[in-house]
Image 1 (cartoon, rainbow, N blue to C red):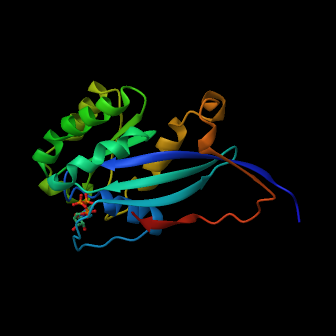
Image 2: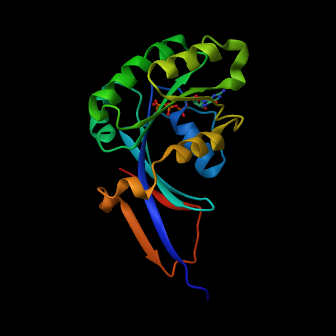
Length: 202
Ligand code: GTP
């Protein structure tokens, strides 16, 4: 058996956005390649973990799926606080979810300043005939906040893998994270490479 010395970089990613915009659906598509048309509101916060392997690095992403409902709002800042990436989702068929993007981004800035990568996502592109927010408006908003931008459809699977790829490309790498050792795993003799690292509801 060949011996592989492997460094695993860990990053925390938090999904934010109004109720029903598709945060959980994006995670389901990414993790399991499934989509459920029935809506089940997220209660509190859920946590899942996914390992991404590329030619030169192994990244373990902890995905924190927050509830969009107002009554859970007070829980969110604590999860933003130690996240490296904030994915802010709106629904392209809902103008109000787009208007609320400012509020979510301000929450991230309040906790992290400019220290987190922000990715703005306009979801539900399969419902293009009901679109209330143009691609250009999304792009413009992202520019305002120096954020990355993509439109996706969790239902059709459109751009979901690209979303995670774009994020992993932006992650800083070990060299710039020497101050941050507790987030780095070092595995010696690691040969098993499962795609999904498991999940738990917290
Ligand atoms: P909260 O947990 O309340 O914050 O909602 P959420 O943002 O996690 O939304 P969720 O993923 O539960 O999706 C809400 C509803 O929108 C569900 O009925 C989904 O099936 C539907 N939905 C999510 N993504 C898409 C999409 O890309 N296209 C379409 N047509 N429906 C979607």
